Amino acid sequence: MRKRNLLIACGFAIILIGVTAAISFSIAQNTEEQDSSYFETLNPDVLHFEQMSQYIHDVELPKTMDFCGEPVPLDRFYVRESLERELLVNTYRHASTLLLMKRTSRWLPVIEPIMKKNNLPSDFKYLAMIESDLTNAVSPSKAVGFWQFLEGTGKQYNLEIYKEVDMRYNQEKETQAACDFLKDLYRRFKSWTLAAAAYNCGGGRISKTIEEQQVTSYYDMLLPNETERYIYRILAFKLIMENPEKYGFHISDEGWYQPLEYKTITVTESIENLAQFAIDQGTNLKMLKYYNPWLRSDKLTISEGNSYVIKLPK
Image (cartoon, rainbow, N blue to C red; front, side, top):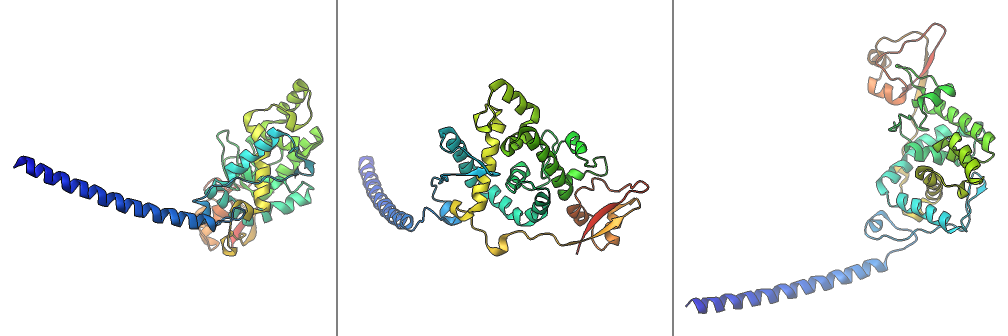
C-alpha cells in the first residue's frame, strides 16, 4: 500500500514538474520576444528616462574641447579616459545630476551677470555647480556656499562673517568674491585651467608642483586625487549642460526651477526678533531665511552707520 501511494505521489510530481517547465518556457519566450522588440526601438543617441533605466550605453566624447578658451589635449589617452570617467559617473548619477540641472535655471541668472561684469569666463559657472550642486552646502572642512569659501578666504575677499551674518550664503556677494579670487589666481599662474585647479587644492600646492615637477600645464601635473579629477568634472558638466538630450536628460519646460521673485528693503536698525519681523513684512521666518540664507541667527544686530539689504518674497 505504501509503495503504491509512493508511486502515485511520484507520478503527480513528474506531471507537475512538466507543466511548470512548459509554463516557464512559454514565459521566457514571450519575455525574449518583448525584450527583442523593445531594444529594436531604442535610439542609442537620445534615450528617454524609461529607456535609460533599462539600457546602459557608452558616452561619446568630443574630438576637440576647451576650458575657458584653453585647449584640452584629448589626443592623450589618460586625458580622454579621465574625462570619460567623470562623464560616465555624472551621466548615470541620474537623480543628483537632474536636480542640479533643474537648479541652473534659478541660480545661473543670478551668478552669470556678476561673472560677465567681472570678465570671468562663463565656463566657471560649472565650477560652482560641481563645488556645491548650487546649494548652500557646508563641506567637512567648513567651506560654505555655492562657491565653497573657507572662513579665512571669505574674510580675505571682504565677505562679512560672524555669528549673526555670514555672507558666504549670499549668492551675489560670494560670486563677487569668487570672481576676485579666480582673477587673482589667473594673474598668478597665467592660465584659467591652473586657476581652477588652484581653487581646489590651493595656489601654494600648484606653485610647489610647478617647481618640483618642472611642468606648467595642469594636464602634465601629478596632483592630489581630488584635484586630478576636478577639471574633468567641470568639463563633464560642460558637455552635459551644452547638450543634455545627448546624454539622456530630458526636462520639460515646466520642470525647470523658476528664478525667485522678490522685493528688497534696506534695514538700518537692529532687529531683535527676525520671526516677528518676517510676520510684520507679510511672510514668515522660513521664507525670510530661504530668501536670505546669510541671516544665521534669530536676530540681526546692526551697528551705527551700517545697513543690510533684505529680500522679501513678492
